[in-house]
Amino acid sequence: MQNKKIKTMRWEWVVAAIFVVAAAALVALNHRPAAAQTTLPSEGIVCTTSTPGNPIFTLTTETGYIGTPDDNVVYMWGYSEIGKPFQHPSPVLCVNEGDNVTIILHNTLPVDVSIMFPGQDNVTADGEPVQPQYDAGGNLTSLTNVAPALANGGSVTYNFTASKPGTFLYQSGTDPAVQVRMGLFGMLVVRPAMGANFAYNRADSEFNPNAEFMVLFSEIDPMLNQEVERAMENNRPINFNMDNYHPRYWMLNGRGFPDTIAPNFASWLPSQPYGSLAVIEPYDAISNPLNALERFANAGASVVPMHPHAKNSLIIGRDGQPTEDINTDADMAWEKFSLPVGPGQTWDGVFHWQDVAGYDPNVNPIPVQIPSVQNAGFGSLYSGSPYLGDANGAIPVGTTSLTACGEYYLISHDHGLQRLTAWGTPMSGPITFMRVNPPPPNNCQ
Image (cartoon, rainbow, N blue to C red):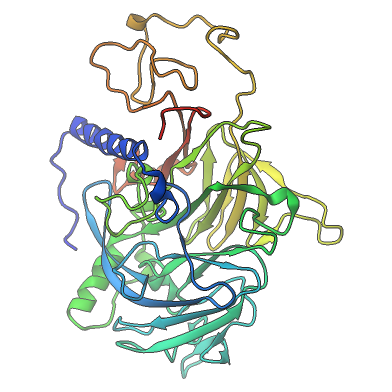
C-alpha cells in the first residue's frame, strides 16, 4: 500500500460520488430477484453453514485488499473458506446448539496463526485442550494453542460442542494486537434448540427470520497494515510500535459509509461481501407481528456507542447470554437508545418500526401545514410525500430522489462522532440506515 495519496477532488465531487454509490446501492436493493434471496440475500445476515449435527468448516488464511470510502485501498488478512478468495470480514459461521463443531485451519501466512473461540467451552486443538502459550521467558505469546498452525503451511483442527446459543466472535489468539486488527476475525452464530427463528431458548426471543441483521465493528490503522505488507514483501519481521497505533478507518461489516448500505455481494466490493442496511416492513399485529433481530459484535479496541435513530433496541442478550434472571429465568431485557458495545463484546437486540399514529393523507393527515414546493428543502431520500408508501408527491423539477416506493430511511451511526470519517473525509465510517418498506402489496421488489 502506498502512503495516503493527496486528495485533489473538490468537495462537491466527493458528495456527488457518495450519492452515486448510494443510488446504485438502493437501485440494486429494489431489483433483487426473489429466487436469489434464499442463497445470496441482498440484505441481512449471510450464513456459512455445514452439515447439521457435525458441521466441518475448513478455513485458510488469505491476504487481499479492501476499498475505503476515500478511494484508498488497504492490505488485509482474513480467514476464508477453502478454495475461495480473500474476504473481509471472515465468513459468518452458523451452527446449531448441540452441534459437534470442527474447524480446520490451514495457515498460508509467514507467521504463526491460530483461532480462539470466546464463549465456547472445552475447545480442543488437535485433540488437546486449548491452553495459553508462553515463550522461554514466560511471556504470553498466544491465548490459544499455536504450535500446529505454524507459518507457511501449518494446520490445526479445532473442535468444540456448541453448548449454548447466541452471538459470538472468533478471532486469532496469536499476537491479537496485530493479527485481529489485520482482519483475522469473524462472527459465530449458534442457533438455539427452539429453532432458527429464535435468538435464545426463550419464547419471547422469536424474531422474523427474514429480518436478521449483523453489525460487526472493526477499525484500521493503515500504517500498521502498510508495515505488515512491506514486511511480507521483504521477508522480514513486522516492526510496528503499537504505542503508535492510531485508527483512521472505522468499519461496519468491513465497509465504511456509503458502501455500508450497498447490498450484500455488491459487484464493486468484491472482497467486502456484507452490507449492513436493515430492511423491514412496519409492525402489524396480524401480518407482521415479529421483531427484527440485530446481532452486534465488536472486533475493535474501543467502545462503539451505536445510535439507531427511531429504532431503539430491546436488548435480549449479551456475550451469548440471554438477559434473564439466573435464578428465576424472568425476562430482564431492556430498551436502549444507544448501544455501547465494548471491545470483544456481542449484543443481541430486537426492534421494529410501528406507525403508531396511523397517519393517512386523507383520513388522518399529519397535523402540520406542509410547506409549498417552492418553500421546502428536499433531500435525496424523500419521495415527495411524508407518508409511507406515497411515492407520487410533488418535488421540484431537477430534484434527484433515491426512493423507489415511498419507503422511509432512518440513520444509525456511531455516537462517537469523531469516528464518522475515512482518514479525514467526513460523513463516512460507521454509518448505516434502516429502510422501512411500505406494507405489501407494494412495488418495492
